[in-house]
Every structure is written in C-alpha cells, then in structure tokens.
Image 1 (cartoon, rainbow, N blue to C red):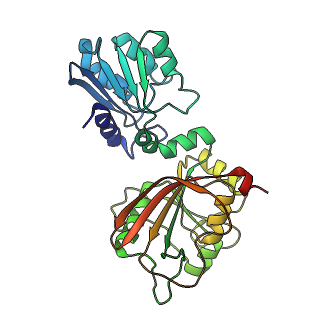
Image 2 (image 1 turned 180 degrees about the vertical axis):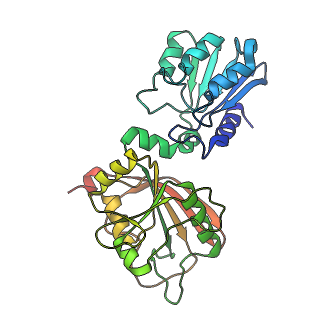
Image 3 (image 1 turned 45 degrees about the vertical axis):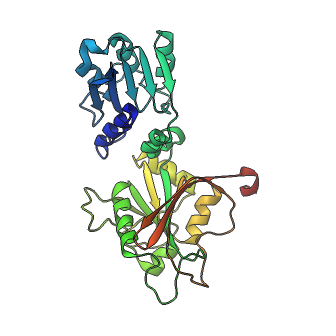
Length: 314
C-alpha cells in the first residue's frame, strides 16, 4: 500500500459523519515512516491535516504530506490548513485532487508561494471519494445516480418474472439507498408499483428522503413538480448532496436529456426479454470510466455519462 492509498483509507473513516464537508485523509511521512495520520469526521474536530501535523510535531519539518484533497485556504471555524502545513515546515505535499469549493480553494497556490513543492495527482479515486460533495459544491445541485435493472437486450421488464435482477443485486440497491440523501421515482412508477423507496434489511443508520417527480398523488412520497433543474437546486439548498433515481424510462430520459445524470448503475441480468420498454429513450451520450463487477448472477456496470451538447440540445 502506498502512502497515498493510506490517506484514502483514512478518509473513509469519516464516511457518514462529515455532513456538508468532504472526506479527507492525511499522512505525514518522514524517512520512509508515517509520523502522523489524520482524517476528518465532524465539525467539532480538527481537519485531517491539522491532526496529522499535530501527531508529527517537530518530525513534520522537512517531511512529505500526503493528503486526499487540496488543503483549505480560508479562515472559518479553523485556520487555513495550507497555512498550518507551511508553519509545520512540510517540504513536499502530494495532493489527490483540487478543492472545488471556491471559498476553500487556493491552498496549492499558497503552498507554492511559500516554497513548498506540490504534486497534484488528479487521482480518480480521490475525486470519486467525494463525487457527491463535489457536484453539490461546484454545480449547486445533488449528485444524481440513475440505477436500473435491465435484461441483456436493455429491457426493464422480463416476461414471467417479477424482478429483472437477482437477490444479490436487490440487496445492493437497499445498501445504495442507505448511502444517499434522497431516492426518487416518476409518477409512472408510483402508479404502477407504489414503491416505498426505503432501505430495508441492511442496517441503515438513516433513511433517505423519498421523492416523486411529477404531478398527482404519490402517497407517502414527497412530490416535486417543478422543472427538474429548479427542483434539484432547491433540494441542494435543503442539504441533499446525493439523489438516487429509480424511475422508469420516462424519468431516465428526462434527466439525461437535461444532462442531469452524473453516474449510471446498470444491473444487467443474464436474460433476453425479447420485448418490452428499453431503459432509456432517444438520447445520445458516451460513457467514461466504465467498470463492471459481478453482482450475484448479474453484472453491475457503473459508468459516468459524457454528453455531446450538439446532439442532445434542440
């Protein structure tokens, strides 16, 4: 394991505790040895860099700091981490990713101005670790994941089967619900299935907000009937950083046409349906960072849409 891998591992200890802050892990290394480690958890503790530097003490002077996110450069509840790094005498900083928050960004420039050498990795793991928070801060809306179970020929219904995907995939969906701030469907799904959208049998610490986009009676679900982008911005203002879409093709196509899907998760079942609706309508996009893993008898394909504005916009 590299020192940066260790910093990523430490950052994960804050998962579910950081509220409106990012996950951050930090390791101070001198003469091939970790002399200080830290991670961020919640508002009444110091930042990851400050904790690691305090542990290192005088051994931080001339050492290397590995940190998953650019050290903050603003005065808030705590002093700037960039300043703390300089004052501790750190000689070199390895940074996983830049901070997209304009209020906190600029730490790299401060370090360079003070003679600290900096290596910016732009590491995809560091970016993905805070992907929801990054979109929330940078674009002022939640990070949107579209999840769907499909047959090999892209259908969302398989004749003679209640479920398209297998038991393991359905369990993963409940874990996914437990990890996001809100889950949503469209009114077509509400009328057809009356879904609960809660996270069951996975030890969920909290339940997500449960939403329905459209007009009409959605039972226990919260109805959002405005323009999609307006509703997403309103949800972001209410602290919703991540939104899981579980609706059918109509909802998927609406979000994709507006370029409002950040991540796709397709549970592909080993079956050919032969007929029935496809999971998405007539919309063009490419996929980046495609990954596939087994999910019981299914294949879980994860990817990030890349939109061609010239083909998708009228």
